[in-house]
Image (cartoon, rainbow, N blue to C red; front, side, top):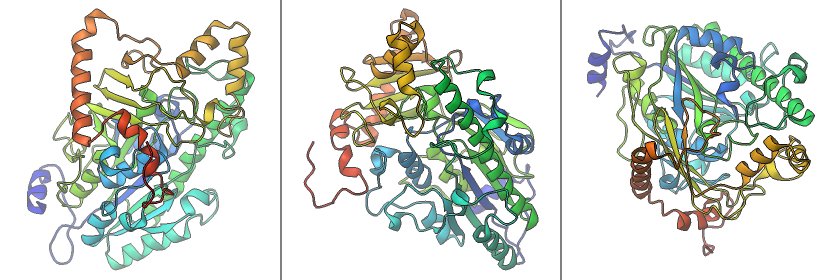
Length: 470
């Protein structure tokens, strides 16, 4: 596979050589935000200033159709590191774990001679499935300090000195609630343009301003890490990938299979291999990230993985990658969540089909409780709805009360305001996406309501010897 990969890329790149004459393995840096809607990032035309990511995009490839399989932190990270979709891996609820014996990028790259390190937010388990060198710096350190990441600095220095390739997973906690990082004064709440699903209240504007400031803070974290690569002369042979994770904690993104819950920003820089300033609308998924990293290192994708490498898209050989993406959301066992509100989804570049497994139940999570998820705005939406505001009433109802099926033109309606499920012109598309969703669920061992009922047994603190109680 190594020789085949070299031959494949030979017309496009010139690989540096080790002293032994073989190709030098690239370093791999993966940077992930936390609860960030990509449309809010300046690099994607949003209001949050992102000068570092603006520059990174000019130096690499920017994706517009990247998706994750679950709009929650824990399933997302398990999905990325294992290359396996959530239900099959066992990690489909939040605060979850994969099945015993599941392997991750740590095993595959470690066996290939890489040092694999994770700095910052973890949210994964068990540790046997994720043999990383762990540190907290990327989550806890102030990036404005002179040496914010000493452990990462040593990793890079040792790698440079010893000629050992590394894979670094840098996991921020921003812009997750509470919104306390960054300079919120840079964003005047009264002058912000709110997303069309938001209810315009002072509480909403204040929290949104603080959230945007945290995106800029994340951008500064990226800057500090990229400077380390420059300092150690590692930039040229390092593939850097930055993603935004699931959408914000405001309604209609995180915790949902709406477009902004499943769509992610993605920027990839690899000097000499990925064309600077390039853009791609190829459909890629988080489940494809580990296979892509393995391919960049000259390794094959294991048969146990669901994902597949999109390296040919990065190198410009292919313009497309997939035709469909899939999503799963469960509320059983999440903070203040509904006991039974499973969601499944299938989408194309232009449309998203959503199936709500128990539409008679009210959708609830930490956002809909008094005080919210450390961001207090929801009750102001409820109060405005009770006062007769039509938009507030429509948005609060739409968020908490769903029909059995939904279909959206996400190309023209990314906020999923207009449900087209009964549009006769889309009957064929609806049937196709529904059928493909059925097939995907079957391939994953996903039995819908039955699987949802067992979600709590996958929680990280659930005792293995305790009898499941659906």
